[in-house]
Length: 123
Image 1 (cartoon, rainbow, N blue to C red):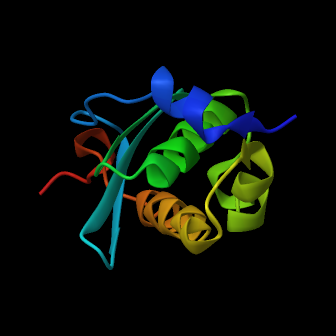
Image 2: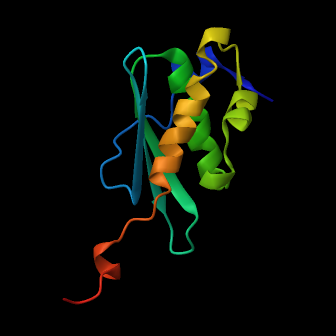
Image 3: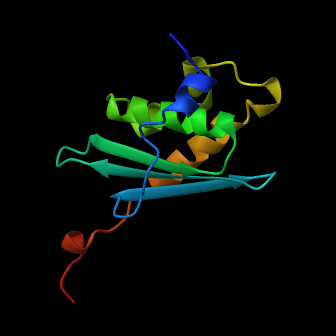
């Protein structure tokens, strides 16, 4: 059942600092839109925590909130597309449906593998 934008924006449980995340993705769009998503993973590679920071666009915040909740609920980042996000959020203005794609772009940027210090070979 999709949750309304107003509900997701009123109490965004996943808005917060992204510093220290195992992976961090960022995407920006027109109208000075920006979203950052930080993802923490367990030893098994599953998402254990997801947080976002976004500019003040209710639709962007709602989509980022929904994405983080889905990730923490077990959805793999690469299995989360714009259509899936749109299905999770009700009441988005038709002119703001593209905000889902912006959130997905941030997720894709976070999915790029990073070398951790413990994974580097000795010099």
